[in-house]
Amino acid sequence: MSAIEANSTTSGDISIRTPAAASAAAARIPFYRKLYVQVLIAVALGYLYPEFSVSLKPYGDAFVRAINVVVAPIIFTTIVMGIARMGDIRRLLFIALLLGMALSLAGSRGRPMVAFLESASVALFDMVRIIIVFAPIAALCAMAFTVGKYGLKTLLDLGQLAGFIETDETRAWNAPHEPQMRGAG
Image (cartoon, rainbow, N blue to C red; front, side):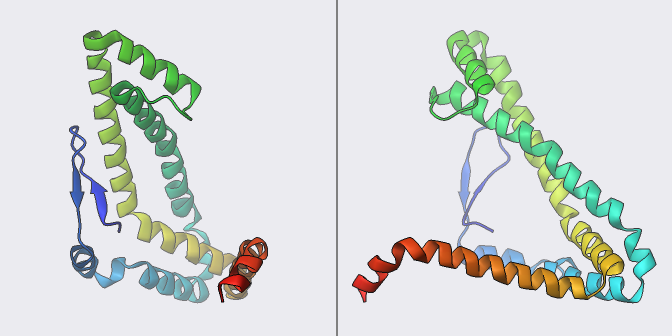
């Protein structure tokens, strides 16, 4: 969890969370809701009950679809609200730019629409919070499906792929910086 979180208020207040507060919040999460526990349960479930685990695929898929549904509206309303409030039109999407400028020009007549978009944004972020509650269960279903359908070897293959990508990324980053790194030593 980050040190700064936006409150779900329309005033745009920001609350600062210290690392101690964030770790205290993390400590309150029941062990069965922690991601690594879900992964371990999923691997065991997929290995011991593969047929049942394959049947969990729709739940993992539904979670991914739910995330996809809320991402675009959140981005759109956030951009429009930013333009309407501040008039900053750099690097923004065309439709959001036009709507934000129109709302800014409309002045007091545009305020109801800005208020609506702010409310919509709060509602969308609340939707994300609801979806996130189901994230550990969705991760369990997706991992159980993968192990149930493709076996434990899949986890080794995925681990090797992740290691390869990490190594490749590290090499790609280090290559142009090697002369600088040698000179710094």
